[in-house]
Length: 466
Image (tube, rainbow, N blue to C red; front, side, top):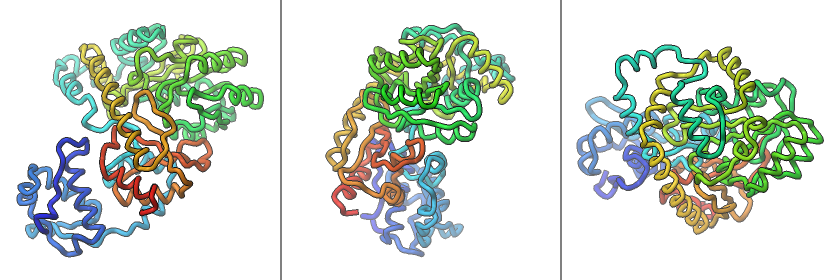
């Protein structure tokens, strides 16, 4: 391996050094630059040449070995293998379960342009480490026991105060902690619907919601999502046609389009809900990433008819799995019984960590920094996507997501598979449609998109060179 072939990692990029070096070597192996049987430099030499630690190179080689690109021959070092054929990947169905599973696998693409969470360098790891290290023995012992079925009392009070700052008012007894927002959504749906019911959902919308509703024996009817929110005319029509009891929507930084519902749109939705006895589940897990002046359905309509779902996964760290539901007291009691029947309680230790972070005075400055950062990145990435040949649906006011498409229709499944072969994970738009209907759109997570290889790939597709 020549000196010119040594990967040159960029410490200013959000992609970890292991990922950068590994992606470079994987590309050289798959493209034939590094041939079968060729010996890679020793860990010590590669670390010296790349200007990184030996641990970084050791982890890189281990990942390449796990992907079947190199093999260890003991003291002789690492040698290039025959690159694995692309068939197993192409045989995968590019559906919502693919998006769920493939993004988390060890061999997942280095550039996770289609994922739904923050990159590692934006997670609030320093505060989580400090919170865990500051636990006294007594508090740690309590956090390792079964907790209150409602969840951590102090954190529930924190959430009540946070909601009140946005003019959403709720008693502590109306707030129940859950194992992430996914459990909050499932518990609310279970308590407010009956098997065989039709639930109204957005199109496009949250991709994991549709299989979850199907598993509960529920049917869905879709409401087109417009730039200003769910279409009121379609909502009225579906209400007359199906007499539904539930409508699940996102008011703030909608997943996947990044849009926020306007006040006028939300008032129209609330008026229809009141006239037809419809309960709204407001899945607003990105609320804390939106400007504090942005209104919500729960603010405009209160919590008698609106069930608000929130989470700390998108602002502190997804691994903590701390979500919550805020709703009217009688609904909270039903959700609490369902929670205890299925999970007893949630994780007190994780809730204690989040409570410490939120109470420390560091959380609000962290949110302000995160919002500002994402707003800047959003503008840069949308501009670069358009320069590369894509059309962006509209410029979101912040958050993680951009919704974009190529000018000409493409085979999006084949394109997503091809992107994986370039270590890029894309999220094609059909994943976000209730019935998996065709879509030419792609969801981009702007926080994972500042990598030149992504824009090079997009440009090659747009200009027919790939």
